[in-house]
Image (cartoon, rainbow over all chains, first blue to last red; front, side, top):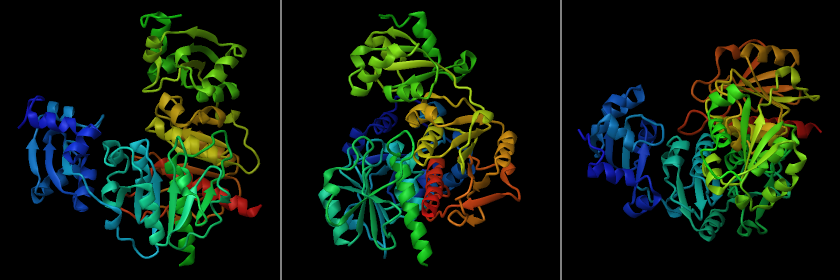
Length: 265
Length: 265
């Protein structure tokens, strides 16, 4: 049992809270039993799991603890004091994993028939990426692609807000031009959400292969997402604020697509 | 100009970051120019404004600064060091207001013809309340009511996530039984969102007076929201997670109501 916060293994993991170290080491942190279960289920390569048995009190945590020997990850038992140093924010769930950073590229994404894709151009707040992933998961979206990711996708805030669906949902980052080419190659209708979009979002037909493109909160979508084959849609904004949060926009658009598709069946 | 972080006025304001002090003093903090503008526009009674001119660089901040003499609020100029002690998180916008806590009750809410109301049962995270308010604002919702608010409505996180729409949108907290009686008195169709709801959310007709009732993330809706006059709707959940974030659910429901209402016109 590791009881010293100065233990080098502990210090090494604490460093992974910084994106710079995650990118340098090619490793990410996964906090919490639910997130770890989803990562394991999705085939993410788990390297180490820090365990504080005293804090593993929920059924979910006890269940995962029992299944851990089946993973090839090294288990390190730590004291409560050490775990609290390792843990994310106010979370004290007793399980923290270190995993290889998933390296999904656009070419790895196998789109189903009639796909529904969400593209985020830039992501300023990792929590927003996580929130979009959670909504996209609920709506049965085929893949989420981040165009020009500013930071790393696997920020602990993104993992947390996604409830671990960042591992179960096909997700990758790529250059904007590559994403656009990929969407066209797969013959997806490209629907860009813009505050000044010319078409009400309920008007287009989303029953065929569709990609919704959403901009960053601060700047909206760049000029790259215009063209004859791109429809700019707007959501009604009837109040004081001039835009919705990106995850709210994603929720409205994805569930409108689902609604249209269900009607078809 | 106040330059000492130990100034009693400064210490008094720092205390207002805690809900306990806000409730005891009947005062709230409003961070940022946009939020302050919306509060002033909505008639919130501003008592003091702390100003750090050096940090007021945006047009929005300069504009508000010029309009401040029209408010009856006391202006206190502070040094950058002091302002950074007062400011919320990483925000350094140079303007922080202290206002009387708005005391809206259910009886104060004047519903328009054919209202659309959102009820939140409990709110665990202030950021979620703010996110729901921002979405409700966009969708032109008539009022947001919190049933059994655990904390105070005007947590700085709620104000921030709402972009200040917490001031422009009619919002109040009330006991659950009172809320239910109020909804019935106003003859609103009560539509409760539940993971195990019996009706797909796209099925009911939301073109008449409607209230959407949403539960807390951890526990869902309590048993109070069942009855012959309450429809339990569900959103399709097609992925790994078993629920959407409450603000995503609010977005989908409110915009579905808008869609139905627009079709009618």
